[in-house]
Length: 165
Image (cartoon, rainbow, N blue to C red; front, side, top):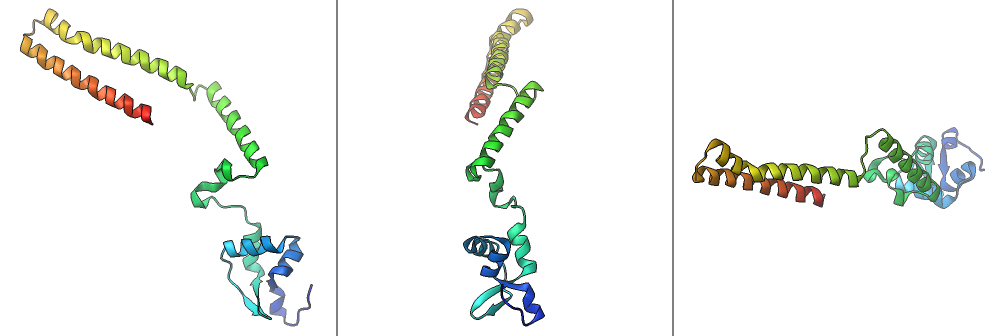
């Protein structure tokens, strides 16, 4: 390391001195300083020097969760972290399934199909029951059938919208 003639210069280091002190590659240090937009404290013999108070957080701070949550994106993780992430996700899914907080899609589809079948059976027979049991006239039955058709169309549109998602 170099000699310090001014006490204030002891806290202003070059990229090479930072890399040597922390056993890092100079390219890594330079990239991290540039990425964090670290201010240059001074110029010494044409080279920038950085204040230690500015470089410490840049080099050793944990990654932040900005930029669209890149830390949680498995495609941007190192291999070991990606493997650990997928294992933890598998364990989370198993736990949620065992606690009945997560239901397999096939079960959801089966239950939805049974529910829709029951609803459509009621809607199909409702105008006939009104005519037979309540003595409704054909004009009233036509209005009831029109309402039933609107309900069925709305239900169908909602199911198709949910399927697309």
